[in-house]
Image (cartoon, rainbow, N blue to C red; front, side):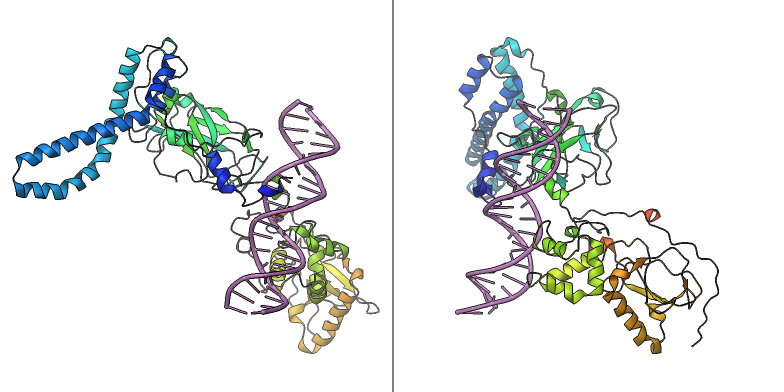
Length: 495
DNA sequence: TGACTGTGCGAACCTATCTA
DNA sequence: TAGATAGGTTCGCACAGTCA
């Protein structure tokens, strides 16, 4: 097993390995490669640019230095002093701009002259009038964009979707964000690539070369990092990403995050169209999704879907041995005897962990069913409970129900004994047969059981789930309905 | 044969408790 | 109070079985 290379180990080294920077090629070797026909035009330009940039910078510096010297000779001593004090700052401030403004023209002119003097038949006529390699050299008129944010976190093997579960659409837009639907660009091919997670922020400028340098390839010996729609063809400026998934997690990369990027497949198009990228996101092992906790959990979820209870972990095994297999089982046993189940889990379950488990479990959506414990030897009397055996009220012989919060004070001791008896004899609790249940104090149908949190309030799933947990919307129409009540004689308060 | 899926193993990580 | 320790969870890796 590769146990020596676990989490946190050698990440920097691995990151560095994947960010191997190509050494700057010597001009002579580049020229030789071109003459041999081993380099394509784009490669030539990419390899020569650093050298040419250096030459231009040196020439500009020499020119400025020469100018300063002649100025010095021509002005009086006092003026020379002033110039000496201010010029360095001026030069420092203007030099980068001078270089940036000069470099593209020099590169272009040098390339043309170089290729005129060194004709390479396979290369044909130089076609790149502008360089997309440097943002700012030529403003790219259009840009690609992902129409929506991605749904995160992503898992290996899962299809990449937008945060609203729709498909992600690639769009070609202009500077006013209008989709370009006509012209050759609107039906061009687009490549989808994976980028390093810390590559630029939204709105920042970058050049094509920087973008390409941030592209991540799969780890050695592994399948391609993404599979599916890696090559799209725009139709009227749009292309749907139907089926794209990651084959590997993002933990091995320095930033531990990826971004999806999109670039025009054709170099000519890249001179006109800026690349797109998404926000950075983590890609987790597929098992992370398989074992993911549910927010909120459902009554039928395995108990390990609750926070702090690991699948096949110690608590899961202990609960299973006690007959607690799902969230409903767990909540029922908690309602009946919190102290007992708490002790059964042992000291390893700290108070804080216990609070987390309970808080998560109580965000469950109840299904609205009623349960009844019929008191033995007391004809027609029973205890009305919800799914998780919280007492809702007490059933009277006339089939009406006194809600638990409306029990007269003088009856509370005996009702408390009924409740304890129900919990002690819980195996005889049965699901309600559907007869109408009428609130004895209002004459209205008994309200359907609602969720009661530890704080005594209905849970707010959006508040209780962690920030990164997906929001689950429960369709209330799918929940069982309480039978429509028949008008029956309302039990008036007779005591 | 390669991709996919399930699972065992073990290291990293988190949290609470213990102890000096 | 801070460091050590212990117990539990999470997650990456590797491997075996299955399937197209």
